[in-house]
Picture (cartoon, one colour):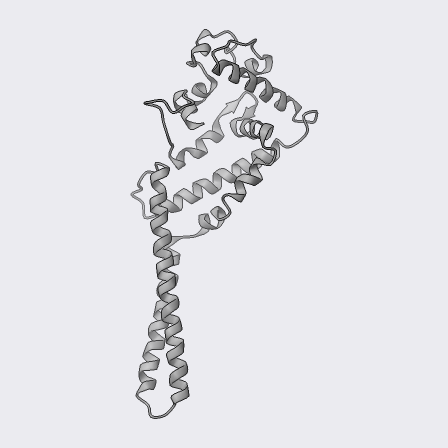
Length: 237
């Protein structure tokens, strides 16, 4: 979709965009299609073939909300505090080893220190692995490096979470029957999709009345047949 908005290309032709920066996601919320927001248009369009598209989308991203709330500095600080507790337990064990007797207490303390050491190692490895994967993730979303103190991947998950929340509101807004309060919206999408599909095959269809009304001046523009004046290009401007 971003290829089409940015370059009017559906197939990722040479020179066209093949990805997009995650920071550009909020920009789509500002586009309008007549009286509809672009997100509302997308929601109605997706429901034509996938009535439960939003629930399906959320099921593939179950941890985004939690990830958006996490701060890497807090995670590192928590592990450091845990490590300090381990060091305290090690000092106590060292002092206990100097005393005569207390065999049972010494053994219990050794077991405790061993468990704490294992947990510290596991947590440290888990966090390091998570950070490495987050950095690797940036390669697929063209996320720019930031000079701020906030890690790039924290911004990544926050941007994705905010977009999903905006999409959720649009999905709720566009729920309903075709003969209900959103009937006009459904009809507009039906007409526009037929117009778009026909135009993509190089056939100039009868201009859909509501779709043409949503894009003033679009009814008779011949360049639409060449894909130059497509609505996505207009939105990008």
